[in-house]
Image (cartoon, rainbow, N blue to C red):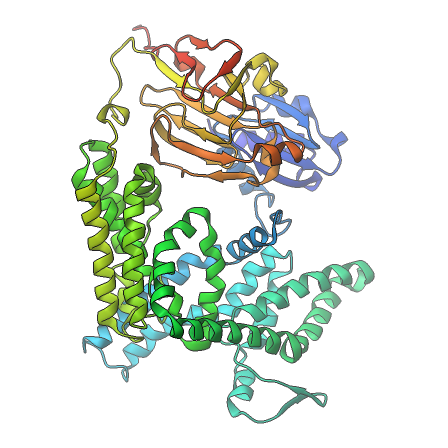
Length: 615
């Protein structure tokens, strides 16, 4: 189905774009928050092609589409501005560390790949110069160096855009503030080293080239100032006076207070890390090399991004990065060991491709989630190798001179700092340890038939197990009419008495959200696991996802870990619904009787895929 007509009719039915305060989507629904619910025409929306039903619940106008909801969401984005995340960002809740990690990831994530790409170019350029293939005095080098260095050089302007989105500030005003910080005349004032004042007030000049913290704090203040002026200024002058006053106030304020103060803090952090690293570099390397991939699993690595980028701005390198090559390449080597050791053809294929992406590009998520962490022991072997190799690299004072993703290609970025031979030695030992332990000590292999991609013989049934221990609840008794009415398919629900939810069947993950998972099985059955009722409103809070979209999974693999108590305290039910979302393509669905059930026991039994009757 083409969803362009759906988008037009739904948007018209909810009262138009101007009546929509916000729009998000979950695994099956478009969730509108309307300014005036009385303007919505529920019947008209339900008549739109592709719409299953409409639910008005929790202050939201929920349009149920099914598995194709991302397509409808995308079409709405083409005819409106509702899907653009320029404002209305919902910040994470919880403890201060979780909020800090969410803040950093929201600001840095959009620029991670451009930073990594230019960092890779810088590393390759350094290798070419080191090999004597290019002279730094040539104009060719100047052009290529500018291409690789411009993004990090003007990082405040890039961060101004992403920070403005995060703090709901005007992006172009943010750019004006950041542009003033890296304006040539301001840079010259700092370079001259002469006294500078602003209306007689002394200005402590610092370099804002490649800086991180000053612009983020400035844009945060900007957001508050803009909201204040929009409230107090008359509408006739608000549109042009607000940006003028914000820039007039914030540029001097940043140069006088925010900039020097945050730069002092940043320099203190970098100096402290260097001081501690100089005392016990090997121990620091062991910790970073051993724990880095653990940080990646839980998303905690984002907490290090501002420290690393700040180090690059202050010192031109970051000592925290030297051990990361050992950590990353050890996991790739462990996955490569699985490639040699496994007898499962699907696992071998996944291990081979994921280890290659880890070696070359430093992208280890496919290797971690699809291979090493899934098999458990290889992940541990990689951690051991990363710790040993990271300690050796750190002992040699190795560090990168640009923002790069650690990998075999980008290891040349460490040539200019510390002992490059120690970096190569540490990384090589890390890979050797991980590979050797994986091949010699082994792991519990995945049975061939559990990941076989071929369809089963005709007449076989597909058994959908319960993803979590608990009590079976009939679908008709689920307190959500979209589920209970069977609009999304046949199935059952489970009241969980545990926090770990596992895959109820083997297949490919076609949908992964914190609260919902869609699995396409080899027998052609589409399974939806929806954790909780209306839990999309938690924005991922109290959920720790263990899988990624497109990943191949087996029955019993962990999907997510939830905090049932916290979900309940937030006012939501953790009732988990398991549905067959393509009932028309399969045979009869047999459902387990209500009552206690253990994880892994049959919940649904689906008859073999129907074959069309010849005409």
